[in-house]
Structures are given as C-alpha cells and as structure tokens.
Image (cartoon, rainbow, N blue to C red; front, top):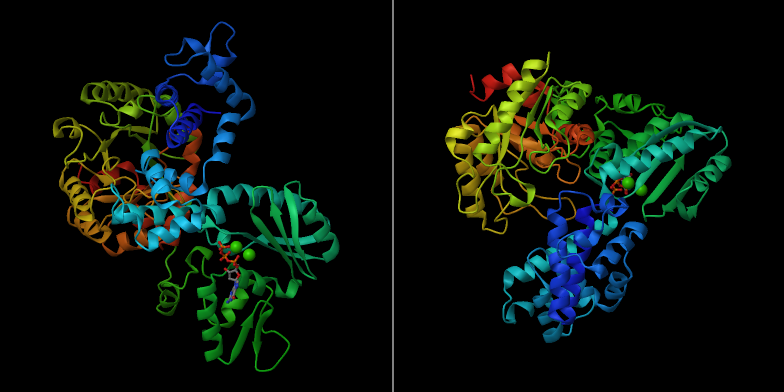
Length: 574
Ligand code: DGT
Ligand code: CA
Ligand code: CA
C-alpha cells in the first residue's frame, strides 16, 4: 500500500470518528498522522521493512498507529475502518465523499433530517429541505446530488484503461480455445470511450458449446449470468459484465459493426439503408425480402454496401461522421506513432519519482524526440512545488544534460499554478526563460464560472504561457469539471495563439472528445501530454491519442506531432 493510500485511510477514520463525536484527541491523532504520511518523502513500506528502523520514529506516529500501518501494509485493510464503515449510515458516507463537505455537516444533516439511506438523501436534496438548514445552501444541495450521481456512475462504469487490462487478459484466455477462429472486442471499448459499461466480445467458432465452456472457465469469472444458444454473459470478480456472442463467419463483419455501435450511429445507418431499400442488422445487409445477404463478412463490405467508408470506431457516435463521409472529408485521425514529444512530465524536483535523466531515457525509448519537464510551481506545497531559484537550478541541470544528449532534447518547462485570486504563481522574468510553460488551475475550483473563466483567460493573455493544462479539471467518476466557459477560453486561446492540453491520464482525458472538436473549430492546436509522475506513465500517451481521435483530430491538429523547432515557431518562441 502506498503512502497516499494509507494517509487517505487515516483521514477517513478521522472523518468517521468526528461524525460519531468521539474524543477529539483521538480524531486529531489520526488527522495529524494522515498529514505527516502525505508529506513523508520515504515509503512507509520501506521503513517497516528495515530492521534498523521503527515506524514510531516518525513524527505523530505512536505505537498504536504504527501497528495500524503494519496491519494495512500486510493485509491491505484495517479492522477499525471496516467497523466504522459498518456503523455509519450510507448517506453519511456519501456526504463525506462530496468535496468540500465534512463530518460536521454530515452530522448536522443526519441529526436534523434523520437521513440514513442514499434514496432518503436524494429525496431531501430534491425537495430542497437541505438548503433550509443552518450552514447549508442550494449549492451544497447541488453538490450532494452530483456526488450521488458520480457515485452511481462509478459503480456502473470503469475507465477505458482498466477495461483494457481486462480485455487483453480475456483475449489471451479465449485465444487458447481451439474452436475459436476469430475474435474481436466490440462495444464502447472498441470505440475508445473514456469509460466502459460492459465488455462485448464477438467470436466465430466451429463449436459454439466448447467456446462457451472455455469462456466460463476464465479465471476471473465470478458468476455466469446467462448462457443462451449463441450469447453468454459472465460477471467478473470486480463486478464487470462481459458478453460473448458467437456468430457465423458470414455475419462476423455485420455483427462487429452492429455491436461496436454506438446505438445512435447504428440508428442513422439503418435510416441510410432504408433510403436505399436495404435492410441492415447484425446478420448482414439485405436487399428486398431476400434472405441472402449482399454483405456481412467484413465491416468494410457492410459499409461499402451503403456507399460509406469504414468509419474508425472512435468516430461512430452519430456526431459529424456521416456529414464528413458525404462531403468526402472524413479526417485521417492522429496516431500514437505521430507524436514526437511529451510536454507535461513531473520529475523528482516536485512530486514525480523519476530523475530528469531517467525521464529523457524513457521518453527516447518511447520513440519521442523531446520532453518538457514541467514540475509544479511553489504554490503547490504538497507537491514540493518550485520557486524561481530552484527552477533556475533545475534548468541549469537540464542545460548540462542537453549538452550530453544526442538527437533528443529536454525542454525547460514548468506547470505554473493559476492563483486563486488570478495571476500566475511565478514572475514573468523567470517564465520568459522557459522553453515551455503550461498554466493550470489547482486551487479555487469551487469559484463561479465567471471567476474561473477570467483566471484562465488572463493566463492565456500572458505572453509567457504556451498552453493550459487539464483545462476543465474533471476527474472521471471522481470530480466534475469546474465551472468554466470553455468556448470563451478557446476563443481567447485562438486570439492569443495559444494551445490547449489534452491530458492523457486515463482518469483525466481533459480536454474530452467534444472539447477537442471545439478546439479544432476555434483553430486552437491541441497538445497531447501524459502528465507522467513516473517514467512508466509515459505510455499513457495512447489514451490521449484515442480521445483526440474521438474528437476527430488529425496529426496536423495535434501540435506535438511536429518537431520542437516547428512547435517553437507555432508558439512564437523563436
Ligand atoms: P457501454 O457498454 O454502456 O459502455 O456502451 P456500449 O456502446 O458498449 O453498449 P452496449 O454494451 O449496451 O451494446 C453494444 C453495442 O450494441 C452498442 O454500442 C450498439 C449495439 N446495440 C445494443 N443495443 C442496441 C439497440 O437497441 N439498437 C441498436 N441499433 N444497436 C444496439
Ligand atoms: Ca458494452
Ligand atoms: Ca453489452
């Protein structure tokens, strides 16, 4: 278990104890420990493993807490937390998960309105009873409802990157089955949607029964939900549902097209077929009342029967793909191999775990030509953010490293914080010395739409700033985007010749697909960057590329498909 995970457990225990109104000293002990562990430069696991050291040597960790840390490290869980979670009503746990709400208000709600279940909590919010309590307002009500919504979503969907781990393992398992001849994942996974509800596999098998037996025998199967003639559904141990459909070879393309969806895309397609007096379904494309399909083997053939190109799955959302096809403007979408540099990476100088040299080495292995080191600025004390003096020392180190590197460039960058009151966390004189400056909102995310939009536009008006990092601040299934007028921000970016980041981290993917398309409309180049905090995260680039593809972006629309020399010109640095 990592330090942040352990700190989070202690912070949660403190919240739950505070809700119950226990001894304040006990509560404070957990809170202090959580804070100490968050800031601890070394891993607790390493300290616990070292015979010559003791966890109790750490500030605010006594014998009792040391034992709890050991329990967490060994078992991954903590009995006192499990007990507390069982005692505290689910409505209270839901309130505690809402950013900005704490145990005090959870207790007030519980005592005043006597709410214990999620349904009751939703009802008192919807009937506007919450805003009548002292210390609560309409905004809190909204925040709680949003929290409930996010929690419901996160129980039902998983991140694409997590789905990918399952998909690769299931493919490997199914490929071992002798009777399976063809195999393809379909559904939202194939369309590269940022979250996935369930997995849909299609197979051609000479013996359907044995293929299904093999599927059921997958090591992670928790339950077989349904087994029919040609369709089978299982539930995995983490709750994810996986469907397998076995189809005849002559229908494979039609089934792949149908089950890739989206549903909205399929509906438009059906209309197009009808207009040509054709019928399309998961078995094929049919003319008149004929039972013999005119197409079905492959997807290309199915689309071709309707005079349509075989759309990249990422575009099949019934947005603009059919218009593009009509006008012959279907974009050639950006690919991971097109990317030449990563422009958002953290090193050991702030909260990353790789040295600059390790990052350069790893980036080169990923086929990149340049990487920008963009550590946090000083306002982010929890991330060991840099002031101008440390930043200049870091840049001197980068200069020295660049003299040794051949065919690869490390850029002197920074992720400068956009302050709550507006303005940037570092002075222009130091920012002007950087090769690459991304500005980002980290604090004041609860401000009004006007405030946040103004802060971001002001940052874009600063000549030193090149791009805005994770422009909407959303974290999938955890935190909604902050209030921001993205259209106004993109207009300002266009006017000032600035770029927008598409943060490739699978939990962010921010800009999202619609945001990417909007950036393109405004003529704003998108930069896909990983925001890596460890060198093995440089591989997250492909998640960002996938999102850009869903936004219809070509290599030309993505700035960092260019050499650094060309990019430099684009941002007016030379
Ligand atoms: P998900 O699982 O919620 O992330 O999204 P999908 O798109 O994977 O949806 P899913 O698993 O319910 O169905 C897979 C595909 O099957 C879907 O993208 C399109 C197709 N499909 C499912 N139901 C219908 C339907 O009622 N009409 C049409 N035209 N297509 C459907
Ligand atoms: Ca699905
Ligand atoms: Ca499904």
